[in-house]
Length: 211
Ligand SMILES: Nc1ncnc2c1ncn2[C@@H]1O[C@H](COP(=O)(O)OP(=O)(O)OP(=O)(O)O)[C@@H](O)[C@H]1O
Ligand SMILES: [Mg+2]
Image (cartoon, rainbow, N blue to C red; front, side, top):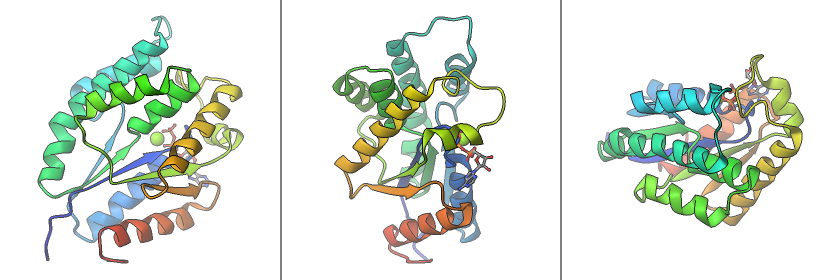
C-alpha cells in the first residue's frame, strides 16, 4: 500500500468543545489502520512550545498584552512548523494539530480585537506557507463549552461570556469564508457521532473512503 499520505488536519473551537477528545479518536483510528500519523497540540509539542504554553496559560502575575500573546503563540508555532510539522509531512505522515493558526485568528483577532490582517500576516510568517489541508470546527455555544471545562481555569478559560461569543462568531465567519477547507460540526452531538463524521470526511479526503 502507498504510505505517502502527507495530510495536515487541524482541530479548532472553544475551550471545552471537544477538540482533544476528537483529535485523539481520529489519531487512534488512523494508527489502528496503520496510517503513519502524528498528534500535536498548540501551543506546545516542542520543548520551547511547552515553556511558552505555561507562560501564556498560567502566568497570572506577568502582564501579557494581546500583541504579546500573538507573538508568543506564533513563536511556539514557528518552532513546531519547522521542527516537526514540515518534516513529518515530507515523510508522508498525516499530521493532526489540536489548535493552529485559526485559534490565533479567532482568539487574538476576533476575541481580543487585534486587526485581522495583522494576525494573518504574523501567522503566515510563522507557518512558512504551511497550511492545513482540512480544518475541523467543533461548534458549541459558549455556555456548553464552559460547562464542560475542568475546574482550575487558565487565562483563556477565565475570560467572560462576551469574549467567548466573539471568538465563536469569529470561528464561524472564518469557516464561512472558506467552505471547501472547513468541516463545521455541531459539537453538541454525541462524541461517537462526531468521531464518525470526522472519520468519513478524513478518509474521503485521503481518497480511501472508510479505509
Ligand atoms: N460531544 C461531546 N458531548 C459531551 N461531552 C463532550 C463531547 N466532547 C467532549 N466532551 C467532554 O467535554 C470535556 C472537554 O473536552 P475536550 O478536553 O476534548 O475539549 P477541548 O476542546 O480539547 O478543550 P480545551 O480547549 O480546553 O483543551 C471533556 O470532559 C469531554 O469528555
Ligand atoms: Mg484540549
